[in-house]
Structures are given as C-alpha cells and as structure tokens.
Amino acid sequence: MGFRAVRISEKVWWVGAIDWSLKEFHGYTTHSGTTYNAYLIEGENPVLIDTVKAPFKDEMYARISSVIGSPEKIRTIISNHAEPDHSGALPDVIREIQPEKVYASVAGVRILNDQFGIGDKLTAVKTGDSIEIGNGMTLSFVETKMLHWPDSMICYLSGEKILFTQDGFGMHLATEKLFADENPMDQMLQEMKTYYANILLLYSNQVSKLLDSIPSLNLDIAMIAPDHGPIWRGDLLTFPLEKYREWSNQKPERRAVICYDTMWGATDKMARSIADGIRSTGAAVEVFNMHNRSRSDVATAMLKAGALVIGSPTLNNMAFPSLMDTLCYLRGLRPKNLKGAAFGSFGWSGEAVAQITEQLNAMNCETIEPLKLKFASSKEDFEACFEYGVKIGESIKDL
Image 1: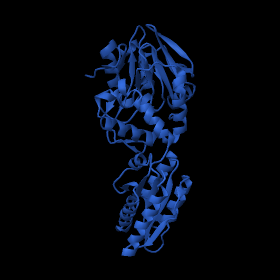
Image 2: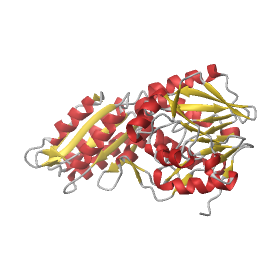
Image 3: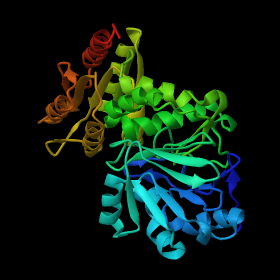
Image 4: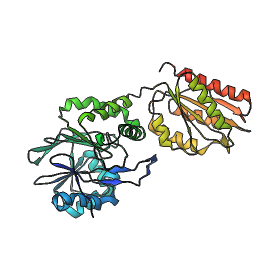
C-alpha cells in the first residue's frame, strides 16, 4: 500500500490513518471526519505509541514500513487508551509482530483484556513510572483516569520533548496537514471546542485537575501529540491548554441556545419570537430546529451558554422524539451553571412542556416558569412569546 509516514521530530514519525468518511462517533456528528494518530519512535528497539481503528491496520503498517522496513521490528507498544478507535488493531498487531512488551495503565490492562483477551503480553504502569527505550530517551507515564475512560493515560518522551495525550487536546478532523499551525485557526478552535463539548464536558473536574498538575510534572514540552487531529507546537503550544482551562471552568456567558421541533409550524413561530425577545435584551441567541440539526451541534453551542431553551409540541401525549433525544444526550454531558426554560404549543393535551421541564430539572438547571400556548396562533400569543424571551434574556443579564 502506498502510504508514507510523516516525520514530526528527529526520532518520531506519525504512522496513523486518516478517516475522511467518518460522519458519526457514538452519537456525536463528525462533520469533518477524523484521524487515528499513532506514533513510531525510531531506535534500536522501535516503539509504537497507540494503534488505530481495526479497519485501518494495513494503512498503519504501510506507514511504519516506510520508516523501518517492517512492523515486526517494533519491540515495544504503548497503549494510552483502550477505546477501539485506538486499540481496535492492537490484538492483531500483537499477534502478528510479537512485541516484547505492551504497556498500559492498570485500568488499561484490565479493559484491554476485557475487550480482547490479550493476556500476559500486557504490563501495567502507573503515574511516576518510566521506561528507558534507548538512544538516551525515556518514556514517563501519567494516569489521567476518566479523561475520558478509566484507563486513560498520557506519556512523555524525553529528548524529543513530546507529550502524547491520547484523546486530550484532540479533535475530530480529517486533514493531511498534521500540525495545528498548518490549518486555519478558526477551524482548529471550532473542532476542538466541538470535541470538548461532546466528549469531555462531563469530565471537566478531571480536566481542571490535570491542568493544575502539569506544572508540577516539570516537563519541558515542545509538542503535544493527541490521538485525534493535528499536533500542537511552537506558538500554539499553550493554546489547547488555555482553551481547556476556559471550558473546564464552565463559566457561562450572556447567551441562550434554543432548540425545538414543530408539527404544524406553531412551535417554530414561538421559537423565533422568543429568540427576538432574548436578543432585545442584548443577549446573544442561537436557534436550532432539531428536525434538521444534530444534537452534538447543540452541545457545542451550549458549551458557554447561560440558558438552554427547549420547545416542543405534544405528540401522542409526549414531547417530540427529537427533543427527548437531544435532552437525553445533553443530560449525559452534565452541563453546569445553566438556566433552563421550556415552551410549546398544543391542541388538546399539552404534556410536552411539563416533560421537558422535568428533564431540565434533572439536569440541575435553574428553571424559569414555562410557556405553554394552545395552538399559538394569535398576535397576543406571539407577544407573550417575545416577552418570555425578554424574561429569559433578563435572567442571564449579569453573566
């Protein structure tokens, strides 16, 4: 296969795979595909940092072979993360190249065996452990539990000054430009924000602890190499750290996110009138019709919002399925410091608004009295919607 490795430092090569076609990642819409980054450390005993999703194994092998001739020369493998997009190829790789050692965190050994039954090839490492890999280089390990699996860890390569961060500081973005500074910065920010909002938001406390601990590790870092998306270096080295600090604090801004669905158009008109009311207070607002938008787009927009506003008609005595799907997804991400509001039109029963309010309460939102209108068709109805928007906007005026 005609794939080639890309050198990222004197001794380290990118040997991963680009997944141009990926459009969904366990509920998260990946508009721009992704990369599965694996890294090869050259030397007398070559080391492989992570593998790739199983269908991309041969692509990784081809890239490895372009540097060292044959993957069978690899004697050591590091598994920083046991999720199948990084370890799916690992069982075959172990069987085919027969490395001397495969290192993972304590939880990583357990999870890899639970998934794949790898056995005694696995060796557990914990925070503070390190291994000599030759040519004066050392790999040091730091467990980062629940960022975002129990097994997650990062490792640091001395000499090359590279911090391999598995899913941390990464993004789902298929690009042949392997360094962040080679890509548009607005794209880097948006894709990293989307990744944080949909994957790491609920682990924000652990993110904060990791950021607090990094200075105490006394690491001279020249490069941050995640398992998804471009590599950080140079003037952009601190950028992902700063953004993770900002997002992990979950300090809301004066902004509202409205998401809704509609049956005959009345809830749509309500949503647009409420948005006008919010905007009239000076607050920003984004509106999502869930008939044609993704739940993960809402999660991204909500990352620093002060208010989440959900609207639905009533269908068969229930809220619209698209809204309950979105609420289930958002509830799992455990956002903090949100005001919540529910609205909707109905014809004869009208249970949807109460059901949405119940979900907002379960998310620990500070809920505003909901707005429920029968058929929502009169001038007075839409004036009430505008005023409801004003009330929501005023509720976040101090953010």
